[in-house]
Image (spheres, one colour):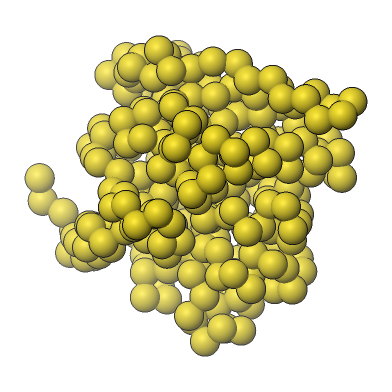
Length: 299
């Protein structure tokens, strides 16, 4: 396979960084390749800011029509592996009168890393656990967790205000007992991004964060005054250029303000899917690339 020169540089950089990634307990963490040929970015149109900004070639005819058996409902079989199903279970946590419902994938006890996916408006815990939708990308995330000693959660969030934040804090508190050394990567889709930003400034959540992933979501507002910013928690935006719910340029302006305000030293990335719409980042984000980058910094 012949890689474009600029893509080759990115691959070498990622491999070099991931080879020295350590967890908080000093253990080497490197997510091993899993279906990389199918899930890596299909082509790089442009890079800027030393590789922090990447514009990805997205084409519906290739990335939906040729990838899915039933468009946007069922990906082709070769994108999916059911190995994680043996470690997939419902989780119910009680805190006072609050009941937090989630799906858990992987072995929670002493997990090496944690990923929590927060759905957007109208979603629930089932969205991020579906093997077949979004081009099989959630199935890949589940496989990366199970095959690399991590654990993945998809909670049901009733609202994206203080109540939703309480639900998230209950889950993070649970992780403090079962996986106390594992960095927590918080990935939020659409309106769920409000909880990514709120969690970054919550004393119960921010100290555990190893990364924030915003998928077609909102800009960060006052993030620069948050605890997560002070802790230099890495942030990655993934956005479609044709998103009509959240304009990508608002998020890009926030990304630029963080880079400019830190002389380009703050760990922040922006992945723009050229021609992509609101759901494109969930379908197209390269989870292995993203997680390895964040864990390298969190170490």
